[in-house]
Image (cartoon, rainbow, N blue to C red; front, side, top):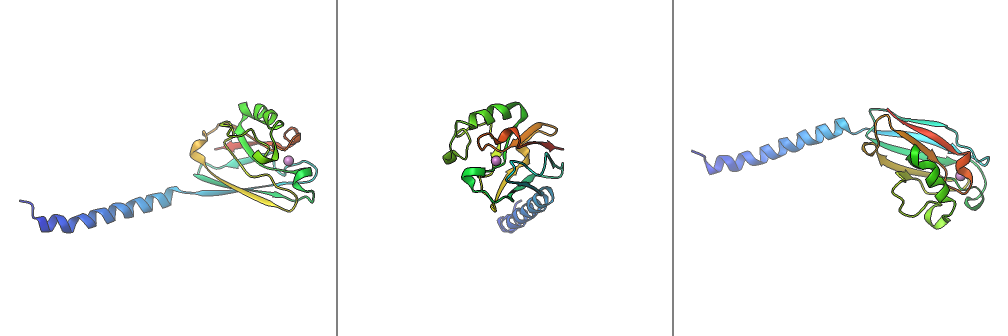
Length: 158
Ligand code: CO
């Protein structure tokens, strides 16, 4: 026969151990990886390839504009798309304005992007890795008008 006192006292213990297990496993699984890339006044990125290791569940990417020119003359951002989409998105970006970060507004082909910055500025974006396919084909680029031709690279998801 069940005692009401016993089940009352058991419940908090069960809940708290379940929560502890959740916190431990979430902590063990979550791994934020840090990526960094520079852009300069010569319309160049410092990296033609970035790698997201298999241990990463989240990426924090930092773009640093190491040049001197203002955003209106030499704006840079970091935009991620599937490689099959990147030229179409880059072309569509040529019609966009600075108000939409030189990106087609609300375009689902844009997986993630930093804001657009000028010389001496830094932009950071965080994104979840589970929206990317392991071994998938991804390209990053700068969507400032004309820059995508020179400023692009491959994101490798291990
Ligand atoms: Co640029």
